[in-house]
Length: 206
Image (cartoon, rainbow, N blue to C red; front, side, top):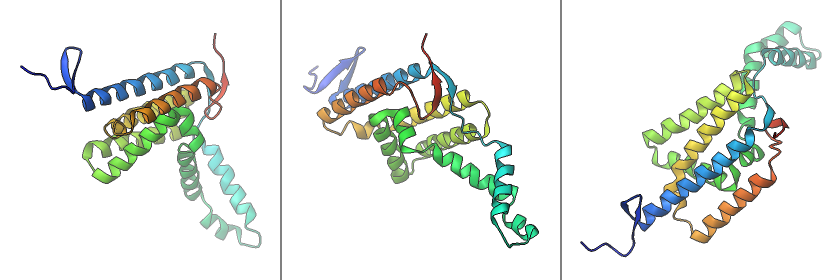
């Protein structure tokens, strides 16, 4: 049997060039993400995105206090725990989409992969993509409502990583030199930003 010129073998299985390139992209992303996760094992105190109930009470009092010349009962009608909890929840969740934070967690190639995954999910509206994105949303909710910062971070990070892998089919269409450049840039970025300042307050390696 004649094998096409653009067919390669991986683990004994024949693959065309595009599939092999996609498999390599997925492998490299997993290696980069695993490297970043390994770096986080040195973090002694993770930044918490937890919405502390005390913060809600404090915000209500601050908002009521700023309404000078307004009846206190009227002010409390507009500034209450439900409204403040909603505002603080949105603020906490959106802070997890901060560009610096996402770059620190995903790296340059990972940010591109995540953005492509979001765009593809919105464009194709495939149920698996939507469900996968919903998992990321649930991970953000968990990180917002759990006092356990470490567990919240890892669940969120793994959800981001797995969702970003969905972009591999699109990433392989980029020029090979550009993919290699992004891989090198991501490894370089991870290596020189080992302090993890955007999500770790204290890091120490034995």
